[in-house]
Amino acid sequence: MRQVLRHIFEKKQAYARLPLFEHMRDEELDPSERLAFYPCMAYFILSFGDLNKFVLREEPAADEYQEMVNAHTREDDHHWPWYLEDLSKLGYDVEGRSTDLLNFLWGEETIQNRILTARLTELIKGTTGLERLVIIEAIEETGNVLFGAMLPLAEALEKRLDTQLRYCGSFHFERESGHAVNADHAELARIPLDAETRARYIALADEVFTIFEPWTHELLSYALAHPVSAPVADPETDGVSQVMTRSSVLTARSTAA
Image (tube, rainbow, N blue to C red):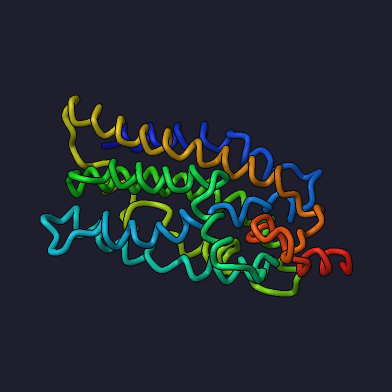
């Protein structure tokens, strides 16, 4: 398994160089601009709780590896309320019609969010507990890249807004296991694999990074299409663009700062 974990780390390094994360590290931009993609990932973030509860988790567990998976899912299945909390604090909790919100969540701008959820479900279906640990390890590394890039932005915005951003900031980052079910890498690395199994596990990890990449491009496209400095649409005349784009809350606070 050691070679599989090393391969995942190498894929993580390449993933961290994707345009979204370069954008997030661009210090010439205001932190709020670098985090402007935040509402775009709502569908996937909320779906991820269900992915843990109903796809990754299997009870009773068939073996010790599935028990490890189950333990991990109990850690990760309840983070989405923190996302919603920050959505409001960042000024995106605007009033709108329910149909506008549904149009946003199932519209063209968020299609990769829905595809990502579906493809992860398909990838996980029928896998063993140990295979799921590999998939989780790869997913966790994609998350580590995102949350690591998000952390300094959250810290800057927490000071500006005088509030705690539990999903974007250190509260969430410190609670993330970062690796499969808190198992240390030494334990995982000692699991013996034959060449055929090792190749299959590497292919599973590769697929995780492959299906996450279009999602990152969608998030960046959304951020560029909805800059924080753009005027807020009139909800009476343009409800669809008003939903989940930007409220005047953070803009006003930023001006005051």
